[in-house]
Image (tube, rainbow, N blue to C red; front, side):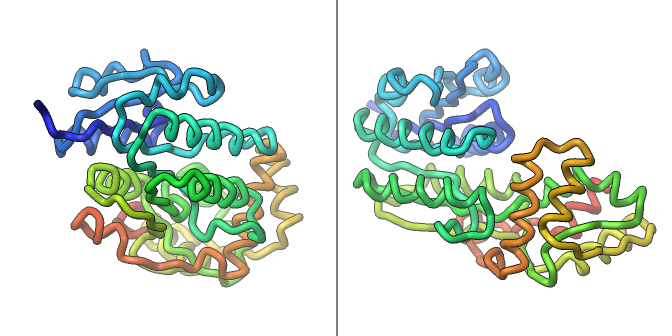
Amino acid sequence: MSTRPTLLVTGASGQLGHLTVEFLISSGKGRIIAGSRDPEKLADLVAKGAEARAVDFNRPETLATAFEGVDRLLIVSTDSIDQPGRRLIQHTAAIKAAKAAGVKHILYTSAVSAAPDSASIALLDHYETEQAIVASGLSHTILRNTLYVDSLLMSLPQILASGQWFHAAADGKIALVTREDCARAAAAALESDFTGDQIVEISGPELLDRNEMAAIISELSSKPVAAIGIDEASLTDALKKAGIPDIFARLLATFDTAQANGELEVLTTAVRDLTGREPTSVRSFLADHI
């Protein structure tokens, strides 16, 4: 009889979940189940050795069955932020189902410095999800991921074209981390034998402000880029004029304010501690993509 634990990752058709499952398959330390509301999107993971299972947070009545037989569960936070409170409802349903199904350890991808009084409107859902996990009594690991350096790629073409990077982060610093490092860390935490309760802050290797990041972009692209500080309201308006929906514009702008307040100034060795590898720097990541 196999003693390998059964590990399930939700949101496995998304970028973070998909990468996490790939790392789990590579290590081969458990029975891997990839969960998605559309299992057909997981064909490539199944071909590599994972099992596919329907996991739909919008159908809470199905979740206990979806989590049946699972030892360790990674709940990848959903992107349902278009309706206030919707994401928390989804996460809470998953937590309750995990307990009902007898899951032994639950992991959750939260965000750096999740707190009820954060300037970032995205962090309240994460904080309240963390509280729901604690209240469940389940053994748990909270993975507080710093913002992805990958997100810079969306705005990089415009930044390079204009030579201007408008922001509301003032001189606040952040240790941006790659999505790949977060996935690698999540896989390592999921397949570990840790059975207590812990919060792990996941960061990149160095704290940088916008001026320092702009200097790196300038150097790598050989194009002058200036970071220009503006206030949150002006940034929100600019993002909306650029075609970004209101809720997402506000989310991005309030992350900047949180950075300006020093909320995101977190630097840890968690990626190295969990994976045995140093996290990728902003410079190294951008050098591969710019």
